[in-house]
Length: 231
Ligand code: C5P
Image (cartoon, rainbow, N blue to C red; front, side, top):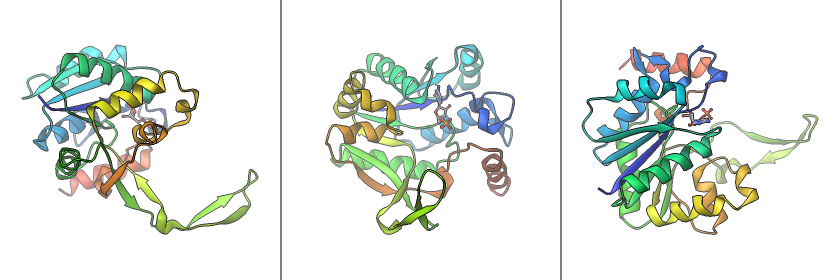
């Protein structure tokens, strides 16, 4: 057992406004969390998966994911994404002690191409301890003051939007999440690689994919429906 993927799926999805938790929203008839897990399995690079869900959804998600090849565990997540990831990480490392590489994904990035997932695992196996998928920014980016007036234009050529899964060598992600428990600054960090950055360790990048976009708003869901309908 060497590659463990964590799938935080315990959000309530208020911004999506679907009336059910986001992980259970159906896209082409298939719940987002099921699509995210199936994408990880289809990469053929992942041997074990821990999914973190709301306590009330535990039974239904276990049922939805039953019968798949591969080791899949469903646990209860936390009050925010990083708590859900932490719960899944500690559970997964205990349950799968032979883990060498950890992927941290989002159930909301349900259309992530399996090939991109495999490229992240390959990058860690080739020697990078932390790797994230990135995309260049299409729009011009402005910095604003608190009342919305432009202070200046940011050089977008050095900026990248970051997606998931993010991939880590196991001892590094263990150290990053371990330290975060006693680091007050960690609560402001918005992705898993950000915790590695706080350790002063390098984070490498591979090309992301537009299909790995996060389904957050009704617009995103509409786009995802068009993508699924066209394939
Ligand atoms: O809300 P947002 O889309 O930013 O959440 C990103 C991911 O984190 C989603 O897959 C969501 O289910 C997950 N999450 C979680 N636990 C929370 C909040 C969010 O696992 N308490």
